[in-house]
Structures are given as C-alpha cells and as structure tokens.
Amino acid sequence: MNPETKFSAGSVTAVVWKNTKEFNGKPTVFNTISLERSYQKDGSWQSTPSLRTNDLPKATLVLQKAYEYLLFKKKEA
Image (cartoon, rainbow, N blue to C red; front, side):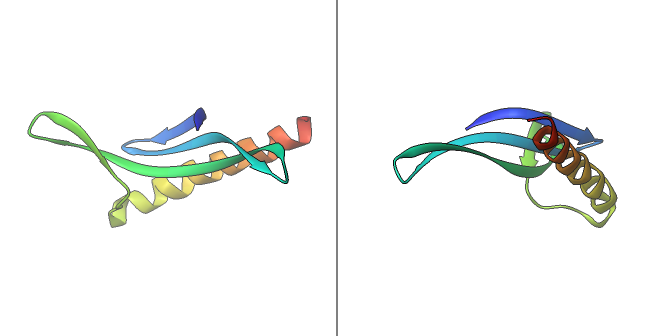
C-alpha cells in the first residue's frame, strides 16, 4: 500500500491509500482511507483510531475531503 494523499484538521488525519490486488489474474488498483488522531504522550507523538467527541467534526471534514478527492479523481480519469 502506498499513501496517495492525506487531509488533516488539527490532530485528525485521513490518509488515502493506493492499493493493488490481483482479481481474476489481473492487477486491480483501488483506494482505501484510514482515519487517525495524533496525540503526545511523554513527549513523543502517538496515533490512535479512537476519536473523542470534539474530534468528530474534524473527522467529518477530512473524510469529506478524501471523498471529494477520490470522486474528482475518477471524473478526471
């Protein structure tokens, strides 16, 4: 998997991944999206898939941006 792009709002990030898998003997390219929140613990940065209530608007925003990116990318292809 290769990261294609990412969208961040504060500590919340959505990463668009480019994947290739073989289906019926042919390589097929598809995308997936991961969502995470970053935080500092004991001076080092950590990440988690768990969100707090205040993270939800940011998660909505970055997921919407990832969706728009994929939607417009497909229209250009």
